[in-house]
Amino acid sequence: MSLTYSIKEGLAGFSRAKFASIATTGSMAVALVLIGIFILMTYEARSVSDWLRQRVGELELFLDESADDQLGNAIYNRALVTPGIESAEYVSKAEAVQIFKREFGEDGDVFYDEPFLPASVKVRVTPQYANKDSLASLTSYFSAWNRISDVVYNESLLDKVMRNMQALQRIGGWLGLLVVIASIFLVANTIRLSIFGRRLLIRTMKLVGATDSFIRRPFLVEGIMQGLVASILASTVLIILYSLLRGFVPQFGTTSGIDLAALLVIIMLVLGAFLGWSGSFFAVRRFIKDVYLH
Amino acid sequence: MIKLEDVSVSHTLPNGSKKPVFERMSISIARGEMVYLIGPSGSGKTTLLRLLYMDLLPEQGRVTVGKYQSDSISQKEIPFLRRSLGVVFQDFQLLPDRTVYDNVAFAMHATGKSGSVIQAKVLQVLARVGLSHKRRRYPHELSGGEQQRVVIARAIANEPWIMLADEPTGNLDPAVADDTLKLLISLHRQGMTLIMATHDYRLVKNFPARTLAFMKGRLVEVEPTTLTS
Image 1 (tube, chains in turn yellow, orange):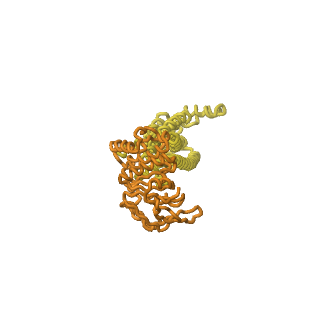
Image 2 (spheres, rainbow over the protein chains, first blue to last red):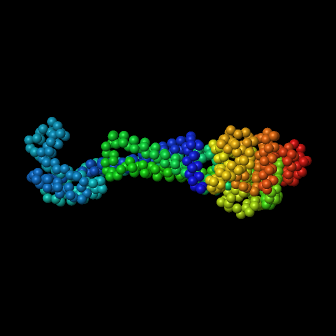
Image 3 (cartoon, rainbow over the protein chains, first blue to last red):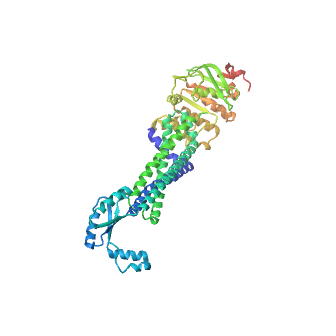
């Protein structure tokens, strides 16, 4: 059966042209690592952006001066079940004083006599609500509650963070796209060179009357196999890099509910097989057309 | 039947101008015939063979090889035309990373034959060219004459009815060249049409057959015994 033969030939191509196979697999692995880094960066940029926006967009609900801890806790419990709220924290007057002391040190001594700081409830919103519009409507919602004297958040900082994140994402996107395009060219060129090295094989196949699809098949099998090997190499490198990086940036992977490593391996395998197949398909198609028998 | 009717072919030179190889050429070769194509280098011998296996299509006129015609053949039919031809080149063109057996078997795999048919046929054709005992050798382990016999074995594995040989003895010493030609002639005697391009007039005189000579863009019949080596 010719398909079995094509598969055998494709696999044998690995050992017959060792250097070309190593070069092609290596270039595909490099390309996949670059593409993988781009995918991880895009994914984690969102995690980091969510993390940052949630913290910058934290609302503080200041209670009336007369409000006691019992009322504070009641407001805390009510805030916690409000849609769009991820977590909340009640800060009593005594705790507010402690925070003040911590932040102002000895210079704050003059204010200690009178406990002038109100109790508050700090509210952290979910990533979907960490934007100006949602925060504005939450602010007016909480302001309408009884015994709430003021609701604040750092609007100007949130504005700045969002603008900078958008700019960074745009630059990252373009750079990533450039890297992806460059790596695809690198792979296509390496595969072309590798197939060019075996034009005698194509020529002989044409000479003995092999159809174009028969000539193509072993090269496609070989390309897919090289792509799969490259994706396994790339996944290993990426997982190691990612684990190292998580040691430095603990925010990585915080908002993910999925097994990123497994997802990455699947993406790499699909991309690797596609890269190998498409690179081989276009290169061999061209050579079948261009190779003359004499 | 092989026929060329009013065929014109030209080469494009690097400066873009066209140089005619031959113009309005017509020849006819019957099935089972043996024909030498002779002439100096660049006279058009190889071009004519390329027209027959349709690696090159004529600018004008029509080439007919069996049931295939150059003016109506599709790209998809060309491989099937080539299965009816065996081609032997001066430079062998064996795959260096495969054994003798695999080089011959490869030609049959490429035409979709099944494994059991291939094994029997490869052993048969290797026996036919006297190389059964070297089937596990690689091309670089063989002499030039042996390599050319492997090429002949590969060419006949798919049982073609035409054998096209382009200077098949060009790289061989006279004694080996004679043996190789004897092998080709023995195949011709079993019914195969043999068309051989050569400039070795000694061979043509020693093994005479119909001889067509390229002369100034024309093809003329010559008497082989009148050739001077």
